[in-house]
Length: 588
DNA sequence: GCCGTTTTCGGCCCGACTGTTTTCAGTCG
Image (cartoon, rainbow, N blue to C red; front, side):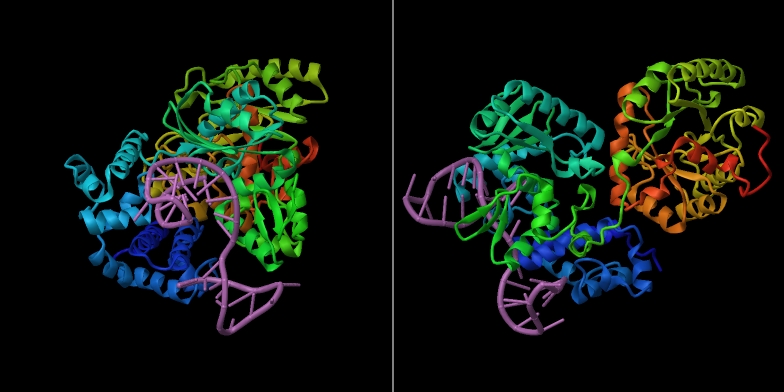
């Protein structure tokens, strides 16, 4: 028997089913149900086969009896009968037309039925020989051709940006908008960027201004705008020269809260909120709560949620995945907030591949309100120029001592990001590691070794009595390499057993642990850290992304080591605990 | 197809913008 299909594959089947049914003209509500199931299934932390074993398929949000039966069909046979049937009627390629801007279900249906287009390649040919224009008219054909061109130039892969790239782009746009837009009172990033999704499709900005018009005009005229895709009194969508779309919504400040909620989404969260409004006899829009002629605007998100008797769900948790019910009952669990973090346990300086001095990093961390910062430069074996050996660590200690004398009570801790070698050993002798305040271990090389080998290396590091933290446990790069094929349940269990901290590396290019792994680690009893992995002063602010991951994983603050004050944090390190597993560490 | 602090049936989010069969359907977020 073949391996059962992955959650991603099952999600893709439901997504395709939704697209094809929509093109066929089925009930929009049925389509929405399948589409929502596809999105939910694609992000579940546990394989659907395992969920089914537990008899819990029906408890997944958006999965009822009919969808559960289709999931079982897929798990058992690798196929879904309904999908195979509709594919005989509408080729799967027709669903691909929906990816073309300005082609929705209605145009896709006409293109398939009346022009005989079976996919994007067909469409290109039908445009070229005039068949599209003959059926839909010249105007429609021109519009579709432009959409197709935009699709082709839309960049590699799925065109989504890693979170960090999108964040930098949004920051840049907002800065230029502040300089250029008259009457702009506030501007902020919303959408998937604010929800700290790992990748971002396009950049969504919201702004407040008593007169939205001039702000919209200024946005459309910003340098870097390749073309304006749509523009009205309160909204504008532009395509930037680098091939990324950016959307702006502008309303007067009294609507800020409802606008921010509306654009932050996600769409299913918004729909739930609007259902709550309907239940009260009104409706919720980006302007506020409307009942008949009367509008109650919300200047803040807090006011909007309070109106419905809810707590405010952190943006990364807004997905209608149970957070609405919890917030209504006042039972949202406390999750890590940015202000809970009192220090950072993983950062680099010019001693290895960082760009700032120890002192510069320390001053910046102190200015962020932190009480401590661990400088964890690379060890020599990574092959990174300038990795530290035992001798240079001694020299670095002298510099750190000087900085601490100057900046007390702020404290710089001397650590290392020590390389886990191909044989599972560490890159520095135990005597050198023992002299440090803490040790962060990392697997950087040999990530493509097989599952057994990489897992054994990581387990060896976790068991080492002088390893306090396992950095970026999977080694994945967002939008880049997938990371090692680690047996994550085994790593998590061993980290819990030995008291080794698992890191949420907050570098937006890493976000590692991912949210689902972080959730499993919390469930297993692990202690986590949220660290910037900064290589420059500006990188210290990465922590907000790590906090986003922790929030989506619903990590409580008490499970994050660096929420503790310095002394309590140090006392919890494996090396400083009497109950640590294995041989006693050497005396400090 | 899903779902329940009015519901196990009868609902299902809402507005902005575009192009133009010039009153609204289609698409999008």
